[in-house]
Image 1: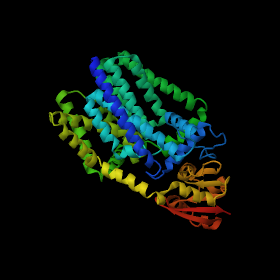
Image 2: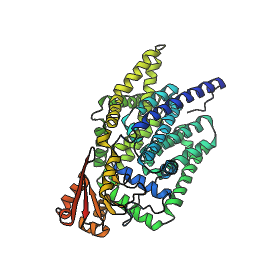
Image 3: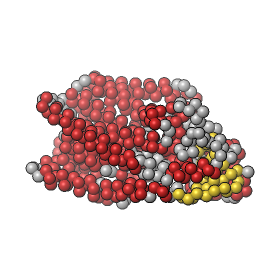
Length: 502
């Protein structure tokens, strides 16, 4: 990561490549737009995220959170993700598409910055290859089509890494400050960003070694993080420290208790490995390719005695997830994938360089790896099938059917996934998230009858999971206290029941 000098002709050539790649990414993103609402199926997290962003946007002063009674606010309120979604709402109105298109744009930024990082570390060919592999991967397609913070965090980590590399290679104090600031702000999007801060920090450690703590660049980087931390404290903590402490105590102490404190290091490591094995269990070719990239980085380490910051950062992030991150959802795979595909791209580019003038052969190899190895054919088929089966999967149609059964202004307890379709003006509901009961049940041992008595809903919407939870813990309660007024079947939401409380 020594300072780089490029002659003007090289800079002009690089600029042309940049614009070509930007155009290709833009075309790819536009091609995804027709499938945004159809695939994947609307997830409960999207209801929570969009509700939080809608309330925070201030567009509708009467809007309320999905937990107006117990007020378990999340520790993260969206940050830059919430801001960009609020801008989308102001420009295009409220809706699922307006939320998902923001994730798609962040996905475009992730692709672009992945190329920039790859070019800085391994050369332009590796950067372009990484974009190809990442763009066709399942984690990218899912995260860029759903309203969750994962793709935003991944993009911000790549932005920070690029800023650090550019500052170290070309000089310029602003880049180091930006690298730290972007990482600091990424924490406000989601705390998982903590796991990837060591990746950027390693760039400074590898550059300066024992002088890292004395280097001006390191202090600028740390200063940027400090500015982000001060922003977080000023916006999230200081307005109501007591409420923040209570919220922190619930989310970190109960709901998201770190695995290290919940069961020990061995079960925590086993749980994290299960996440990876679950994702790769039916993607063996993809697993082999990505493992090849990691092994190649290990081989370079053995040969040069110099650690690749991405390899070190990958191991550090895995360790942080083992000890601190309780949720083992596959949604988090996108956080690791940019690093994994960059390591793979570095190995593939080395192989390609040995093919000499056989550019056609190299291009064919890339297509085969992307389509077969990274599972693009299967991933694309899922998207197409979801779009072609839109009548059975139509979330808007399901929402319309629910609206027909529930009068406007009613108080409703329901899973968060249905809030998006039931929050379209002028139709409004006083909506309480069903999963709030799960939280207060764990926190205060509140039963379902007690919860219903506290909320006093007019209607309760139960899908298969919610129905199972109620039946297992309060068998016969709904039949004794409510009337089943509708049962709507929609793939993939299953049988959705509407109960009117007596």
